[in-house]
Image 1 (cartoon, rainbow, N blue to C red):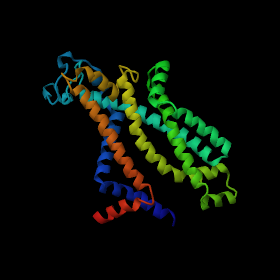
Image 2 (cartoon, helix red, strand yellow):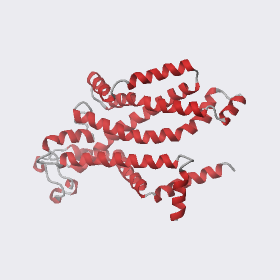
Image 3 (cartoon, one colour):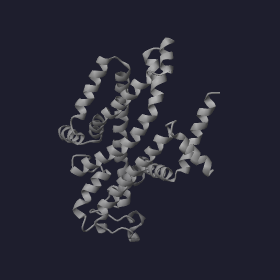
Length: 300
């Protein structure tokens, strides 16, 4: 009896997403980016790295050299379309790895800080204050300069700077939820702290954290692009959208498309993430979900 309403709400999500055209378009854009990140390197990896000096700085929409040059060619004659598609893998890998790592670590520390006693909470929160006291970009510059630029190091340093966001949010949510009746009832019935946290508190906190992670994904992707643009991020022969913008900067007056297309990919992806995160915030909030449900049923 209790599973049917939950299943109905879950099945209603695609319908509500379809009714919100901006959110649906954002989901389509993100799906295309995800497919490019998964299959792009296998299909176009060789094409994206092969040089053709005859096609050097080829203008966009000139199909004389083939459909791969629809976005033009770069300074070494490599097709921009193939490079933008292949670069999606490293860009998404860094952003997804950093957000997932920060989400797991920050949530675990926040659950402990919110449920345990004052001393444990103070130690954990002071650790977060120390991390937040330094500018995130400065930490990234210093760490990458010491450890060197690689995908793993980029994920590590960006994850460290984002952990306090999830830690503080989780702690605040847990401190409020642990006083609710259903949590107190579970404790009175002899449930262990681990069971209370994982079975009763975490499911209530999870929608908020997922929404923050979706929004934070865009921030991390912009941070990676900024580091690559500064020359301390991913290094050639690996490519990311931020690195492509950096490589196209000297040609802005003569070949604007070298920086424009990867920059457009960054803008569309971050905009889609922001729009979808706003939709998710409403869809996962029982107090506001009725707006999407009413819109869906009204238009249906």
